[in-house]
Image (cartoon, rainbow, N blue to C red; front, side):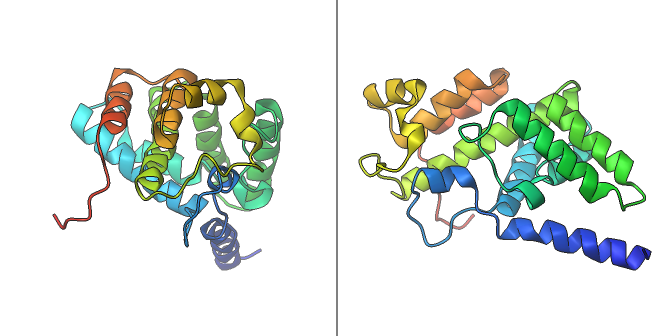
Length: 214
């Protein structure tokens, strides 16, 4: 296959992510004309990584982080956006790794890109740990933005299996808003360092949407 065809094939495949809607928002019945796609999430998490590196001066190779985040959802071009309420962590990882290997097998730098994907997945380097925290926090920040728009009604979740999860029910009973529930769940579920926790707590306690021009 020609190099030109490899370039176009890879581009067109990745372009699918512009139309893959994030499953979590569909499961929570987010009511909005446009709901975030996986491609938009990738952009958001890269921008969050740049900001976190800037303000907290992390000792990481930010260009490696950005590259890693660019490909961290690559498997979803084939398997879609699966949540851990749909499949186990082990099954999701197996499906993603098989998909990514297939996608990258035709590229000259495929092995190098695949290594970055796996590095992110295993969280065993400082760049991967940093990128993973950004990935999880970005989702919580987006939930806050949707909540501030009034896109979610917790009383209209009849077809939402997640709402019956014991941890979710416990947070609901404390009177937490939908976004606060997401943020507190993230603080318990993910290995955030002190800086990510500070940002998460700031978001819980402040309105973050800003329609004013800078």
